[in-house]
Length: 254
Ligand SMILES: C[S@@+](CC[C@H](N)C(=O)[O-])C[C@H]1O[C@@H](n2cnc3c(N)ncnc32)[C@H](O)[C@@H]1O
Image (cartoon, rainbow, N blue to C red; front, side):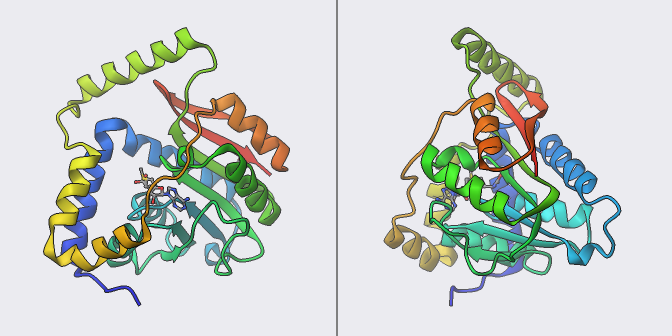
């Protein structure tokens, strides 16, 4: 059983996590809100909401799951991630609202904790860590369990298909970051160095290192390529509903 953490300590580290993530996604809160809007739309008319299940793929310490829980109280939210330190922070911070499950998203099947039918799957800044083939398998696995009308909602950086447009979306992202005042926020690597140096997180940091939680793969699929994969996986339609620079919210409807 992983060590449990003090809630105040978790609040500190998760808040610091959010700040470093905003360095890369200045409009992260707006992106979360848009994803919550889409899930609320997909669940419209569903009562009681406690019968509905949403997966958070690559949930990290639960930033998106927690916001979803606040927006749609009672919703069953299952956060999946392979990082023991981030999962422990998530459990201590949002464990009363969210079930956190230790799971590798590149595994060929979804973990047993995931029910046979889900209503939505969400993800932020995580699916670019998967090679195209395991990503396609994950999309198929989620589509197979998705209720008709359910949604997969992915907020992530995706390069534009055309190089000049890709360059321009990066320029727009940097301009927005400057105007939002997030360019001096801590870098993600500094957060990890600090977390590993905190004695209260030492056991989790050791477990993390022993497991070699490294990113083994990645993809640089464009929004169009993600949408094609999602349609091939069984989603009826897929496309973008929000964009800021090279950051998209892509929605696929089953
Ligand atoms: C940049 S973090 C984003 C976390 C969170 N979704 C957020 O927006 O704050 C990327 C997350 O993807 C997770 N991840 C990457 N590859 C994974 C895999 N193969 N299986 C499970 N989780 C994975 C990492 O552990 C990490 O928590």
